[in-house]
Length: 179
Image (cartoon, rainbow, N blue to C red):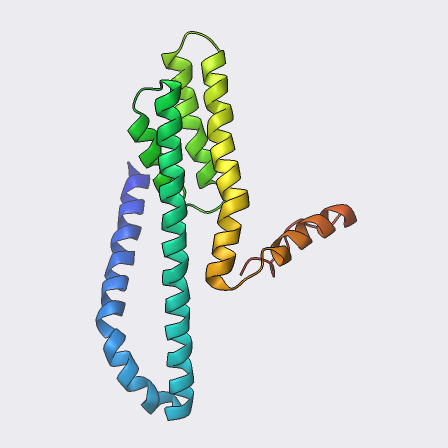
């Protein structure tokens, strides 16, 4: 119970700071030239606008990929005869927003449910294979290409350190790869 109270307090504090920051956004634009000078303020505001535009574009691509993942998960669960197919699609959609582990987490609930629902081991194995294939193909093939195009970043620099670091015995993901 104590942990839930701490989480709720953190969420409430974050929302308060977010609301206060959003209320001050327009005033910030007017006060910045007085604090930094007109030229520096103009460059900083342009950088903020570009950053905001790129973030909105990234979230649009992330949402489109999540919708596709959710739809494919729903269709596959429906074809496999898994109960609550729409739930698994919505869950895959929502968990796709969590970087790195969201797609992994989206695979396990439908598989565990398939183990309970079906008496044989073949159908849960098929569900595991299908859900993994959906997450892997979208997350590793389609998603990097779409996000790379949206943000004008080539996926190659992200993959090179993994392969070069592994063969040299170094850490597979240096911090400069993922900002």
